[in-house]
Image (tube, rainbow, N blue to C red; front, side, top):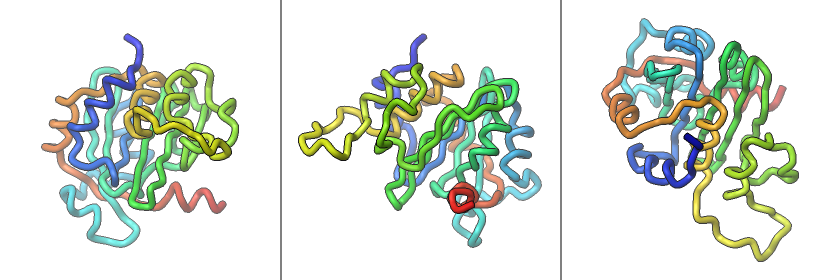
Amino acid sequence: MAASAEYYQHLVEAFSDTESLTVLVVAGSSPETVAGVLDVDLTAPIGRDGAWDEEGTTAWALLDVPGGVLAVEPTGFGDPTCAALQRLSVGGAAAVVRHNVLAHLRFGCARDGELLFDDNEYMFVEDPDVVPTELRPLFDLVWTDLEDEDEDEDEFNGFDVGLAMGEQVTGIRLTADHVAELDRSEYFRAPSQVYVASLDD
């Protein structure tokens, strides 16, 4: 089944808020392994609202799904570094879509320990040829050429296309049932701002 932007255009309605949200999909892994890479403290359940309680921390919910793990973080500032994304993909694949109140929409993906693509504002990359060939049909739906003054408005937004590209990389299709189960899941404390800090290194 091919990844579909139309499918995710409807699925995003199941999330309560995509303005501040990180969605991480990891194929071939377990919640415990993902938690270890993200430095999630599984002994410290804090609830979703606890993601905003302490400066420098956030919260993750992790769900065991067929083929791997689905994880969400509600602030849009807890997304993994590229190095962590690579570690998560060893023996499988990983993809992250993140949007935050700064309007930064990131997409990153890795497979078998190798980073395939990552950009903090992926829709605005100057050279679309840096995007993996397998993702170009989806990516091209939302790519914005900043030098084109007559750029048409896109039918899709970057978040739904990012989720579709995540499925293309990992082979894991998210469902509304997954989102509903995450809403009932416990959240656990973890560091925030690690990706943004890594960009300055």
